[in-house]
Amino acid sequence: MSSPLIHLNGHTPKSAYGHEPASDLPPLFFFTDPERTPHPEDVASLLPADCGIIYRSFGDKHAPAHARVLKSIAQQRGLKLFIGNDVDLALEVGADGVHLSERNLEAATGIRRLHPQLYITAACHSLKTLDNDGINALDAVFISPVFASNSSSANGIEPLGTKGVKAFCELSPVPVYGLGGIGVDTVDALMGTGLRGLGAVDAFMIEDEIRV
Image 1 (cartoon, one colour):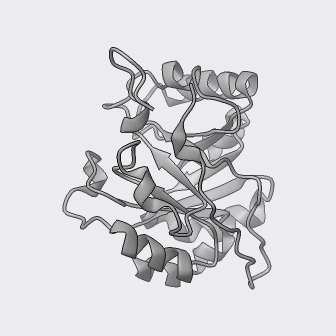
Image 2: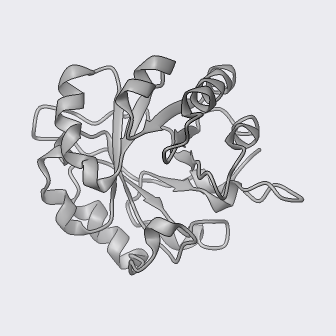
C-alpha cells in the first residue's frame, strides 16, 4: 500500500520547557475506528513501513487482544503503534506510545515523567488547547477536523480549513499533524501549511479496492 499523503514539509519545533519533541515520528498515521474500520488488522497488514497506527478501543472489551495483534503486525512491518487513552494497555502490549484525547491532555505531564520511553501525542480541536501545560510534554498534536469529517467526534465542530491549520502550526510548541476529512482529493490544499504529517480513518477503509 502506497500513499500520496505522506509528503509534507513540516518542521519539528524545539520546546522551551525541558522536553524536545521526538523527531522520528511517522509522517502518516492510521486511526482505527470500531465502526468505520472494524477489522484494523486488515488495514495494518497493508501499511508500508514508517507509518503509525493509533488504536482507539472506545471501550471494546476485546481491546487487549486487538492491541496484541496490531503490535505483532507493527513489529513485522516496521510500524509504530500508539494506544488511545490507555497507558496500562500500551505498556502491557509493548506499544511505542499513547495518544490522548483533548480532555485527557493534562495527563501528558505525568506520563512523560513516569514513562519517558513512550511517545505521547494528543488531540486538539481549538487553539485555546495550546494553553494547557500538557502540550509541552507531547511529541505532537493532532488537530481536527481539518476538513468536514464523518467522525462522530467532529459533529458540531467547524472544520479548521487551511487558515486554521496554519495558525496552529505557527503557534504550537510541538509538531502538528492534521486529521479529519483528509484524503487524496484534499491533501494538496495542505501543502505549505506547516503540518508535520497526517492522520486518517476513511482514507484507509477497505471496500472493493484500497482507497489510500
